[in-house]
Image (cartoon, rainbow, N blue to C red):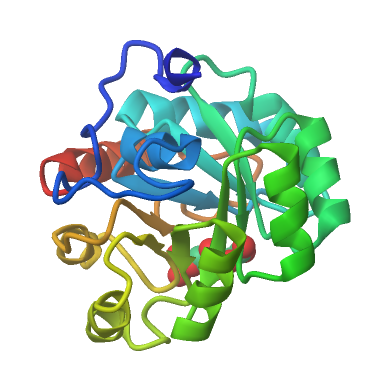
Length: 240
Ligand SMILES: O=C(O)C(=O)C[C@H](O)[C@H](O)COP(=O)(O)O
């Protein structure tokens, strides 16, 4: 599956996230979710209202250098957006805001190649693991991480990253969990992404800042601006 995850013509932003000590244990080190987290330093979190905007937005993000795209299930168009974006060469499209097994099944049916959830429940965790799809559940405290580890998971979205205490909190939280790696999301932006990515336990960050809200005047998404923001974010790969 590695080749399938390598974006067309793209260069993964690093091998093992943060080199560091190789991790041991199930689900760590060489997992699919690890490979996805290593493809781009920033995962755009997308809230797209109109499936007609899906392809131009995905093309602009991929052209800018970001190939891993998280389509949130926050809009009625989301499943169609996943289908459309999956047609874009080089894009690795996943579903976000996956709250339960129904969301999981619908996302997989639409072609999602990875699954992100804002939190971790045992039901969703077990179903995602059983499906074999790369899974990045949200955690915000030590208990969440321990429940994830019990399920065999060790890659997590730290959400909501800034509201949960920011870098200071994640630094403290990561200390007892040496082999765990995180994707901080929620309040991370263009200005703060580099600081997060410099942390050895951060594999990548997520954020919605890459795609400005689409104007309602019918002109569609501002693809030049999206591409510019993506390129700026992709350039952070040297830091992660
Ligand atoms: O919808 C979801 O599934 C979420 O879990 C939340 C999103 O990842 C964050 O809301 C993105 O945060 P911002 O980059 O601060 O906008």
